Image (cartoon, rainbow, N blue to C red; front, side):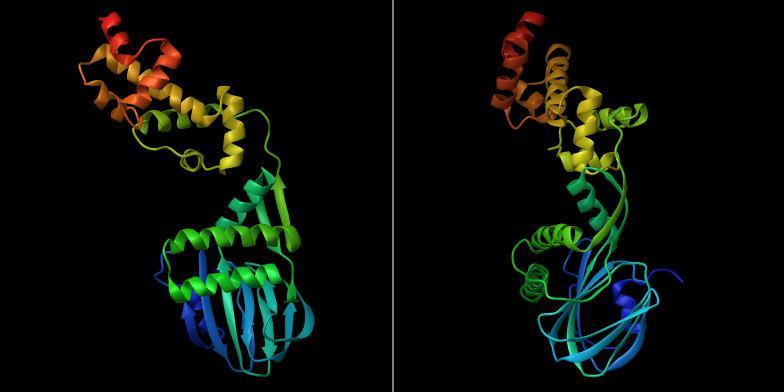
Length: 292
């Protein structure tokens, strides 16, 4: 049996859904709130990391994780952590309202890689049945409020909240396995791949994240390896390639300079002129005239 996605959890742990983030456009983060009666259930190995916040009601709780039972009394203000891909046995007696926040493995690994400047192979959350953690509770409460009210920029806001929450979890509750990045720069294949990607997207507003994603890396790791390989930061490289593309069009075409600026990814003709003069000592019009 595969790992259980959040929406399938009621098949194992029946409850009434009070709130869900389905259809809100969130990426790598999900929220579901439930009303539960007392139960004795097996929570299957989940696809995502799961945080449980206790909203209403109070109950004795027992959980068996990796063969060990833990016991506590849980109510509003408390939270539990459950790592992904690990089955657990839960039993409680009284009705409770809880909120589940799910964080994808990809998002957690991405944040861990950026925080540690490394390639992360695995992250595990500690087995914590009861955490009194104001930072975690506040972040979960803010995510709940966004699901309820759906304000401007919701997906971006939730991504920002979740990344901060993940950094907190990594600091306090996580075990991380990683392999240090070698300081040899990008390999030949990835170097060609990113060079081709940049040439194909010069007209686009390229971001560091997009360039890193093109070669399957986190932005911080990509930026360091790029500098080792190309001898300059990614942004400086992109500008240099745009100026070179503009130079070729100035000497090899009759396109208006304004159109050349747009084709090569400059914000406007003045932007092209300012950077072109810095490199070639002449404005584009003067350069074209001298070359002709």
